[in-house]
Length: 362
Image (cartoon, rainbow, N blue to C red):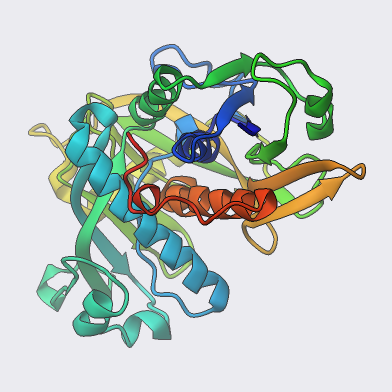
């Protein structure tokens, strides 16, 4: 039985590990950081462990390039898997709800989008264009569709528990270079293939951080709402549910390493979202702030790296990193890609159809 080591315990690493287990492989996860409750996770010390700081939700974006087409297919694959998991495991931290999209200056791709194309060609279930009377002030285009949100702490912990109870091994280590893992001793034996789901890529000159500041509030919200402002900024909310509050955001700041949240930014985020979606305010017309959140999205010029590499002559690495803020949205599509690359490397048949249809024995 091949022994696969997955480096990284974020949403991509966990999804890939569970996916490869479904193929019958022995899998070990190596990581410095693992899922923990939002009440105890150290925001400063674990700022580079991106997955807990995600919203996280699914936005369906009309594709206009081959790269976007690939990502869209991955998002649909992930949608199907999330639906299957939520049906079997209500405790997994997944909630299906409406997504609302508001654009102040829509691109041609949005303006040309019809309900028929969205539903039949792009797989956007429940898609409906909004009338002018349904749009917030300043917005010129809007839609709603069926989507999902997750509570990251609950969902990632769920994946880790499922991985462990099915025989997966975990090892907490800090890694300086992925190649060092090939020399380690593991209970499951030597490493046949390493999956690099580290997020940062280790020395990849195309990787950079995108700082994001959001605010976690206790106010519930019945929908996940995203507004693209004409100046390029974003206003959004992501309900986490499962007693996880609602994320209000947010900023996207390339190459900004500042770990400290700004009170001024928080107030601006809350003000803008209240103007966009007043329903979120409580009876007293206020937000109940729980905490400010700063995270670092591992972003990559050129987008996702999903490929196999052979180093030092005989060490095989499958890279799966660089998704920026779309880790959750594309997670099971990426995990499928990892499974296919591994099957090609091992010379085995294609991955099991059941696992490909969102039935990875979860």
